[in-house]
Image (cartoon, rainbow, N blue to C red; front, side):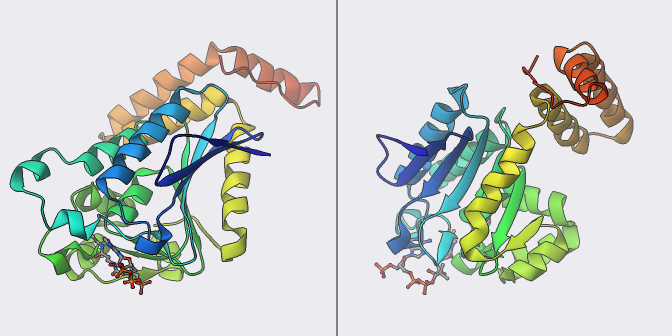
Length: 264
Ligand code: COA
């Protein structure tokens, strides 16, 4: 059963018995464009679910058949000034998503453009429906992708491919996104949310502290030189070797029973 959290106008926020929190962008008539209201509600939902110990992982998706999110709200964008761009709420939101303690999955249905694509890029994992289309079309509007798109896309798929998307604004379909490594899986539309929850469930069944530190090692190590990355890996492993979860995981394997991890 899914319990719906009250207090959101532009989002549907639900938490299932499987401990997966789902944040659904809910302005399908505007292709889930990221207005300032949406961005502030996203920040609120992220914090609410982030602080909720019952929630183990977060899935982001879009309502309707056409879009995950069609980027910044262009009507609002038209009025924005240089000073607004110096403290970009959407860039801060993406940093908060990336810095979340909980695993994050973008379940991309339809268009993920501009800020929508950048939101997906800030998540740990991206899975796509067959109708997903990714792109950073900002140059068509005379601006650049300002919510991390110039940085995260090239780190994920390589500078050449990223520059092509950033400089032309062309869109990539789900198949191309899969071969580029932008998404890790493509599924039929009707299976998308189920597949995202299942993926979250798999992660949640593993040692929580191990998942948390492995994720940290990949993320922090990826931003450092290899020797520093290996040092982070060693230190994280040393923490895990002192954990109850490691004792439980190894004992459960040897006793041929499922582990009961406690996240410490
Ligand atoms: N900001 C504000 N409104 C948007 C929007 C956006 N980013 N994207 C779509 N909309 C609105 C349209 O203005 C339209 O509103 P209306 O019904 O009041 O006229 C409604 O959503 C439907 O859009 P439409 O273009 O008819 O839908 P579509 O399904 O044919 O096309 C897209 C979908 C996403 C391809 C197209 O809407 C688009 O290119 N959007 C802009 C994408 C973009 O440049 N994003 C980067 C922003 S920095």
